[in-house]
Length: 309
Image (cartoon, rainbow, N blue to C red):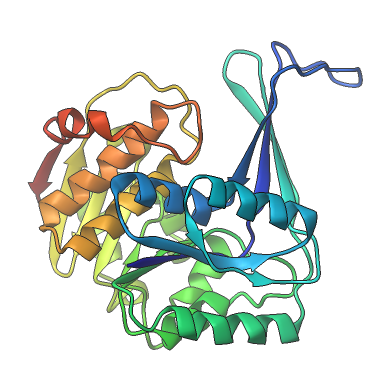
């Protein structure tokens, strides 16, 4: 079984408008409302892959009830810790030939007592699991090193998708995540060095630095350019085919789901990287965020090229 952690879930609301008119009325006829947050996108894709998965994290208020009801309606197992505050909204305005303007609430203030209650639940949930994913932002009141605390509490592989100060704090402890999935900009922010795929030797040297010591898997996502990956001492270049992109939002979450699925199944390095990339591409081909069509999996899988470098 795989546990997914979403500490700051949201009700994702998408408002499509032909043209966004500033300082005027914009009428919307087709609104979609989805149980959101990066970890819940991971959860949905894992479910569609056929994995046994349980979603956990913090949830609260009427928005929280909507989220859990929607998860239940799609037969996704969940066991959240209920907080006194109201879970957040995330609003995406889709407009003007593919542009997207987002309004993201920070989330409810979390008390020390609520954090302690969640940690108690977390320890119980993670006793007999094969892998754990941790994704997304932290709500107010949660310290930046909280993900490091979660990593220290489990002995199973932890796949972490975070960024900025939260990612830096998560890597500062003695126990490291099993896998991280930053993009090139996030790596640059961590190490303070400008990097490029054109200077592969410099990039490899950075990934072998002290910052990433004892992290078994580094998967550096590069959008349409595929990925660069490091597993222990081995480096891989992953090339992906061109696809017609419908909605790229959530593709990184889908990639993490594919990687977690591969870890649970004990797949080879090549199979793991291909599975992760396929899931990201499949998500990009769908209108709904955190959604894939497994029927198209095999065709894309065969088109991905993984080269040891």
